[in-house]
Length: 221
Ligand code: AMP
Image (cartoon, rainbow, N blue to C red; front, side, top):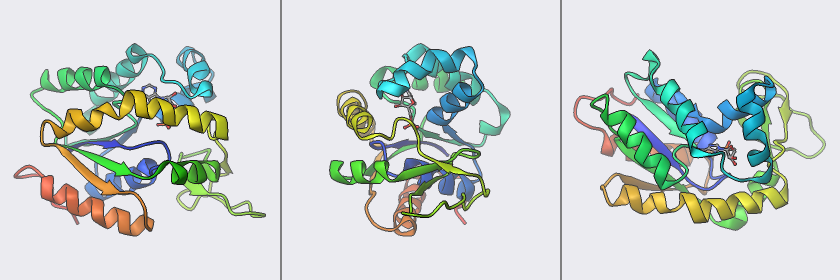
């Protein structure tokens, strides 16, 4: 299945996206992770993106659209993919539709993970991510835990500081939230409440995905 994960920063897209990608055996394509890797590698792409990311703003469309176009062209996306963090505005969604249509494909469903703003700020300021695999975790006071996925070191993202979190939330409201109406108008939106345990949210997501699956798609385990 070709899925889009939508929701404010801190809604749990990364956590749920990793789990769903494993469950469906398809790649998870996270534009934020790709951009952070580029910054770490000191590439031209990274230095172009960093100033926007540090301010909590969107990186210009042509940059991220180029990244996604190149990634979707790889063979491992032929049986489906999960997009996490893309599209982030209506222009990107239209570009995505065009690039998929050119290959006779389209998005099957958009899963909206919804959480209240207060939860977002609390979750993100306590969030840590694995510097090796990007897997998110919550900070535990006085503890230096390792990533439960790969054992890597957990670090705080530079854009998970309170001011930047508020800027990112504002960008979400202004630019990304219109995508809710965009996918709803096509009957492709499925809302999943992002509150509750990781496992509960995941069960809910799996049920929604199964309900939206096109005929003949890979069965959920
Ligand atoms: P994320 O890891 O998805 O929270 O993304 C972190 C940051 O990367 C965002 O605040 C943006 O600056 C940038 N970014 C990620 N995905 C996109 C996108 N689709 N369009 C523009 N900027 C993006």
